[in-house]
Length: 169
Image (cartoon, rainbow, N blue to C red):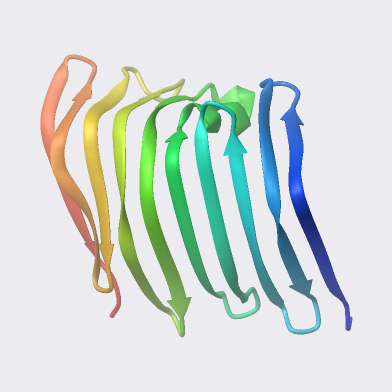
């Protein structure tokens, strides 16, 4: 159908998720063009005492092409626990700062930027022990995503871990 849907939130709008008691404020705009299978939008999210999150993106869902940019400032990962299904029983902790850009075009993935994650902890039903690190960096360039080597703990085990994932052909 030849239909375009546009939503604009010019002022901060309060959002409250009942089961988890999570409250945050959202401001942004989005557009969905069904005839062209196209989306475009940006959103600013502010979680009181838990940081800020910005996401801007555009793309097409019929050929899976998109470009997105995100910026996180003192973003508390505890908020993720609040939005995940309760039956997953996942708990997250830590702070994220940084900027990251991702693009998929003609089947090729590109990225740039980086994130700093501090005081990270992941626990849940699927994990026998907590997974944690004091500080780690995720860096992205056109040809790879790198998790910079850092010290990680899984229960009583402590190891240094880093990884690099090549991108492209």
